View 1 (cartoon, helix red, strand yellow):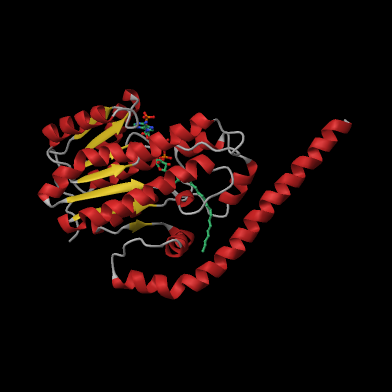
View 2 (cartoon, rainbow, N blue to C red):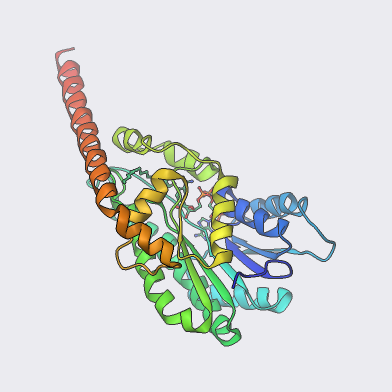
Length: 307
Ligand SMILES: NC(=O)C1=CN([C@@H]2O[C@H](COP(=O)(O)OP(=O)(O)OC[C@H]3O[C@@H](n4cnc5c(N)ncnc54)[C@H](OP(=O)(O)O)[C@@H]3O)[C@@H](O)[C@H]2O)C=CC1
Ligand SMILES: CCCCCCCCCCCCCCCC(=O)[C@@H](N)CO
């Protein structure tokens, strides 16, 4: 049975910017009460003002909480408690706080691996851990994780980022099996490149290879991504993806993920061979991008030396 958003309490981590902010707006437009969680208080207040423009009744509230979701579990637990005291038990948690850093494996600091794992992975574990008991007791709840297309395949430059987004998938599959009997549903979203402040930041240091490979899929608008994620979360779909490449990737990488309908399962079975064939061509083209960039670099190095 779909979750009713009017009057529901939705917590969005990373709700002050980009995809998270658009998810908050989408839920608010459908009558939800919102708690935004992020670190920077100015950005939180700015987002709150923007979200409040979309109110549909005069009872709706947007609450802001400043905390780092990746640092200290007891802190996260405390702020979730505060939010529940003000707006009632959490009906839907959206774990959208996250970041991306790219670079060749040998160029990335080991601290980058630790940082991305703590923000993207542990930063999703802590808030989820803080709401799950109440959700199970109430037999109501949705937990949404934001992975990435780069959480469905490993890409040049994403040794640190992809692994942190793959980790989310494992967490979500295990958790879904535990909580389904309690009527709590887990959704994992796999967005493509999306036009957000975070994406602009990421592009400043992206290797050429990563950029060229990513350009296989076109950049999405955060509003469109948010709409799809909210729709899938309400429905209780385990998988949330966007576009025809998103659909193919999710089908191809379904593995042992739960299915939400018989149709979904049948589609996976029927399309598997075809999508694997298409994927082999993509992989070939990615390899040739990497090889071309390598030769280009070697050439310019020789040119530099002779100059
Ligand atoms: N944009 C894209 O191309 C894609 C993004 N994604 C994923 O979607 C999510 C959102 O991305 P996007 O909208 O681009 O990101 P933005 O950088 O635009 O927004 C990130 C949000 O997360 C918050 N945040 C970051 N770190 C922390 C932290 N440690 N504790 C609490 N809050 C934090 C930020 O606020 P503050 O800094 O104030 O804490 C901000 O509200 C990320 O998980 C990203 O990996 C997935 C696929 C594609
Ligand atoms: C049947 C097979 C179809 C194959 C399609 C292959 C598509 C590969 C492109 C991957 C793009 C990765 C986007 C990462 C976005 C992201 O998470 C960052 N922007 C984070 O900010």
